[in-house]
Image 1 (tube, rainbow, N blue to C red):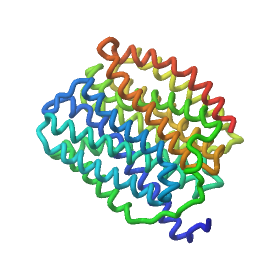
Image 2: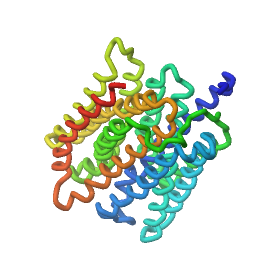
Image 3: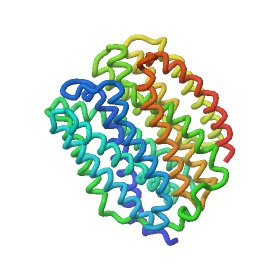
Image 4: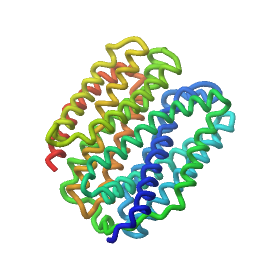
Length: 382
């Protein structure tokens, strides 16, 4: 297809990155609210809190899995706008929950928020990863990694913004600000592409990419969804330390992506970075239970974020390069695998905690290093 004029193209690229920043900010709200939701007036137990992740994961999996079919029938631009709309509605529901006094209504509103937020995540992420490869066809790996760096940066800063909102009255003001951002991004029209996503549901040879992203996402979910609870509740270092650990995880992930994405292949290969990332993730799981002190733990979660940084975007860019005519469907299926893994990594520790401490769960999670290394080797052949 004919690419849009340069000025319009720049505006569209800006919109894609804005959508990613908003999405990253919104998607971390439930784990960022962990301290508030497990305290008065909500008083959620570990299992009830963990259950909040399931609708979000389910919505993201369904949205991402059908993204190619939706794009094939209605167009890429509409898929993108539907993703933004689902996010907008989700944030309005979450803001409404903040104005209730706890109980079944509050819980139902947050569950509904999670479902819509997950659906929006699946559609939006499939669209913006596809558009990144479309607009930067000559450097898709770098573009996708930087896009995910922007998403990760927003994810790192969002808990801090939420804390500021809590300190100045109500945490509802931050979801409302994000909702306003999605409303601003909605009117812009993005170009349609010649992707054939709707013609094939599962491209042959995609399994290694999906499998390794699934395993990686279990690890990311175990770090990201439980960092705050692990530091503030299990280790009893307080809410501030827990928030810092969560933000350090996402901030270091973002910084590492910005640093590593532009490195020339002649300096260090993508395969070497992927294998190092896999080993680093396993090492952080093995290290955390042996550490003590709030700042040491915050630093350990920062190291975990750096280890996780390039794994997902590099595998995504390799998969899009391997299947150039089915980019939306491939992106959607990989995002679906990401969300299934996030769900397992987020919900699983909550189910296991009656019999195991988080220290034990993290130590056992070091075993994920073996499939990560094997999967990284297979996926990086592209």
